[in-house]
Amino acid sequence: MAGRGSPSPSRWWTDLSDECPITLEPLSTLPYPPFRLGGGGCSHSGDADASSSSSPPPNAMYFDGLALASYCVSRATFTNPLTREALTWEDCVRLDDYLEEHCYHHHHHHHRRRRRHRSHHSLR
Image (cartoon, rainbow, N blue to C red; front, side):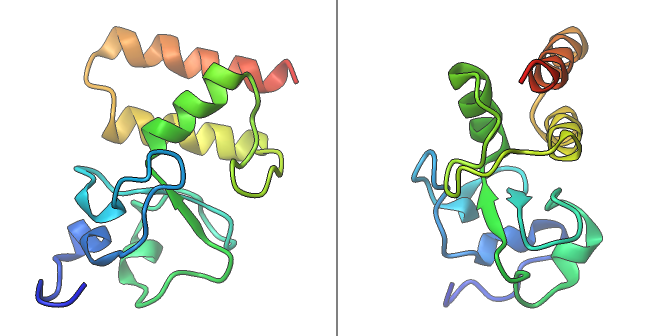
């Protein structure tokens, strides 16, 4: 995004011009890093590999992670909303870890949700 200057490595996503495909809100306005699916490597966009890279990996798709989790649970379908590819167990574990780190602030709440995401995936 022009005019903003370089974001600090801890807020690398503020230069993204994309919108979350679920919420249609700009990813740059998220108070936490977006969650990445696809593109190889780690799906958790808060990792150093995502912040140190000057461009996203090929086929990377970024989402508001909280919106992605809500989408999966509310529809009882653990798929990428853009490609309809099934999320792997590892994707669900990374999403749970992401939510715990960036979105859930109440200890009891996130453990309940964490069990739900992982257990729902195993029911497919």
